[in-house]
Length: 350
Image (cartoon, rainbow, N blue to C red):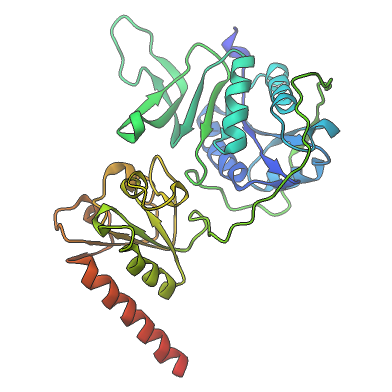
């Protein structure tokens, strides 16, 4: 493999029902950062049926070039045709870096494609950088420069690993949604659009979609919430989350939780904040009964305002909190809820 033949930072621009998924914009923002020290361009790979019209949207969020693979076989996501499409693009255009969102689709597509193009893949990354590998020079071993350094939680989130792929290309990573920041869109931006179709011949690996059933949920995605009231093991019991739900309702927010709560079976995984859960950036984040382990903090430290309530004055959560209250949450939270409701009633009365 001639590594010098591989150039550019590529992003798989996931779309569903001809609507670009938010993770694509987040990855484009990070791709711009990675491309700068490499003096290269950012390319979005758009796969689907009748999707060419989405190219301008990708340009507004940072794509210099958009490779469009458009075919009726790509109308709905299926592993085989999509893997064939993306692997063919990689073999034809030879990207140095290939980023895929760690969504349900990306977690299926990424490993399949990496195996086909004979490269490694670091899954569920929370940080990406360009740097030297090994990180610290080792006597007698070549230190390679301008490598993609891929950081992810390991061993259930108990440690952080930084991984590189120095001897194969592309350097592939799936990236957790909500971790990277999308750039402000540039209205009217245009990208070079390349239409590429490797040809699709259905075989026994092409599954047949009989019916698509869209689930309807009344649960707000915590990644979209502006106000989060998050509870940890210190809340004491699943029943005790009622006082957090009352506070969330008063604030027009949503309840979330730490990993310890999910492990105890008190709340579903969808509500978990942290490195092994979801990364959130609300305007206001309440950390109630949460000690503040690094795995949790990594998932919420970018919140605009963090309020911590904990009976342990030495809890690490106070190190990242903008406001901290030391005391019994069973007394503090109901009083806070009552005060907020009273203030809202006062304003409503004029």
